[in-house]
Amino acid sequence: MAEGNIGPMWYVRGPQSWPILPRSMSVSTLQDIEACPRRWSLRVASYPHIWRGHGYPPQLRPAVFRGMVVHRTLQVLTAALARAGCSGVGDATLPGVLRAIGGYTKAIDDCVDHLADPQRDNPRMLSMSTVLETTRAQIPTLRQQVQLLMSRVQLPLAAIRDTDRQINSTGRGAYSAYARQPLHAGSYAELELHASGLGWIGKIDLLKLSTAECEIVDFKTGAPSPDHQFQILVYNLLWTRDADLNPTGRVADRLTLAYVDGDVAVRPTTGAELCALEEDLQRRTQDARTATQGLPPQAKPSWRNCHMCPVRQLCDEYWSAGAQQHISVETPSSGSFARGRHLDVEVEIARQRDRTTWDATVLLASGNMPRPGSPVQLHLPRPNETHRAILSCASRARLLDVVLAGGQGSDLPETLTLTSLSEAYAVHFPDR
Image 1 (cartoon, rainbow, N blue to C red):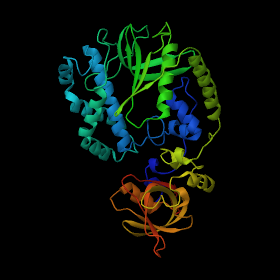
Image 2: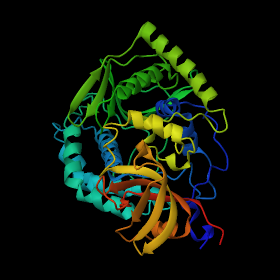
Image 3: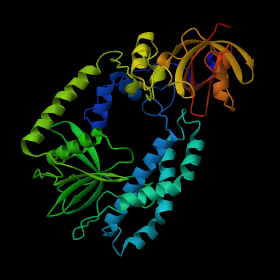
């Protein structure tokens, strides 16, 4: 069997071309580059040999996908409230708004389909059906989260306007852009800001604008983080610098991070603080441009950067003894963490014992456990033809998120089990 028997998604090959920094910077792009220029570059580079999509095919974990569904549903609902002139849960028009979109459960289910549709051609999403199944099983919990967040949404009662850019009741439709003209009092969902003088863009979840107050609301489905505060402070800056939507340079009076467990108020920056933030973004943007110019760009291996990196299988720096030694020092509970938990290994495959078991030797392992040179058995308990093909025909492979089993001190080789969360990538094929 040879390399051609495995789809191009499943063997290690770098991008056809490296990316250049986008003309307009965003918070997520800046933070991604600052964390690791190599990771950002590998994620957004060109891979026409794999698929027709942009960047490297993303992997959506069920928990991440559920967070996306909640966030998307909140956008749909807040836009529906604004269209209907409904101020929130205490408004008498709310039941009619919910009936029009089929209720909370229907809105969530439609958003699941909307977010899944672009992933249908993603060659990495072989388990998309599993992701959808587990997500739909969690809809009652997702509904509770959505209802909790929506219970705290209060739109300006006297000044709700229909917007030029709408999210339709199913959450599926194409968007038409907001007119790039001064915004009047109203509520604006998913508002894109352009600070052309700064070269930055941002998209805020909700802007509430009245004669008395201006509030920016950002919905968050994860745990609170200092990064969230930085993000909403940047949104405030971009709002003040958007000469089309906000020609008077009005500063937000309130900045709100809306979490499931409660709202967090962030003090808005004004005056000299805004100017200082603008200067800081200009400096960091230039540093980001410099950091991405190398070929390949600089890698910054660390446990925080690497343990959930979606392109670590392509990063030769990550698969080096020096990087793994550095990462092992930072890894929580280093020395005992790996047993029974997920880890990454590069192995030399020796032979296949039976349909579900292979003998191999560890070349490298995250956290250096098991040790390089250790014999292991690779176990495939569930039918996965992609994994089976790679283990059967590759002489060397990189395995992500496998589970280490077997007792210490045993004479038997330890076992690396490939689960439904694991991925296997062929690195080298024997000459046959």
